[in-house]
Image (cartoon, rainbow, N blue to C red; front, top):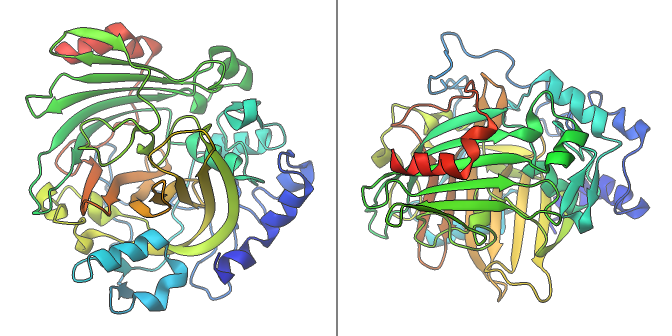
Length: 454
């Protein structure tokens, strides 16, 4: 790895050398909220001053904001520091992933990364911080890392000692208690033509509910419940998906059901996992690409490589704006860089290598996880020959009515076909509703059928 990564990995190496699966000590947990943020990031900035100290993130929404609005940009007055393009990319290679560099090489005339001042805007509710400190010395991986125990609400491994712990932090990171989402995805052709695929989605995060306990989560064995129905185009409208994601994925693997409008029947869908193609994705992403990574980690060996400083998409309020049309964003090859924002942040680097005897279209995946939120912001995805295959970037922001840091748009670039899919387009649709009250009855196969026929 790069020299910077090696230097920043030293503290991680000390932990790993003690025990790859050891729980952190009370003394380590006491650092949370002190020299570490409440969820384990380094509170201090870097020596160069290009990464500032974390001071709590966004604590107050911008004046005039009302829940239900597309989120106004609290940093609209920031100026671009510089733009990385094909002419100067070599000057910045140490702060880019191989996949990002490949995009400059593939699209030398059009792909650019406007870099802005770093704003450590990620913030979360106090009960989530409190829960993280409470479970930090208790949480543990079970079933070879394919399940989680003694954890609820908070980040289970704020000082991770291995790659599995880090990826579980991403899987269970805080995104509110429940939400409804409207919007969709598009996969432009090489010429830029696209069909918008509309979705209505509901999600209930059982793990994050204020009343959640390790005991009731394990008894029910549910992390979250998710329901998605296709709203457009007409030929796909009514197709629906229901997922119950489990906490111990060996005891009970993910449960999924689909509703097909042609058959007018709900069927179990055990193949909605791993590298099955994502819904209406033109084969440009896998099921476990959704949310940058989801599902059981059991097909990979996971290695925590340490930390590095990296330019990642962040505070993407301009890209999120309802003043943009989808046609303003979508262009041949990649999204319009004019509307993107990149910042320098510290990221955890986690490498997943396919186990012997396991099958997946990705032979290796390298994830770059924001230290302030545990959101995967960049993923380099390799085929089984070891060649870069796809590059994914999550353009994130602070949803300050919750508050939480979450992606507004996920973009998966296929290097072979020179196409991409943009997932989460919502500029022309109503904003997420985090105030909605959902219940288990909204996530049954019967409810799935109602979604499909209405």
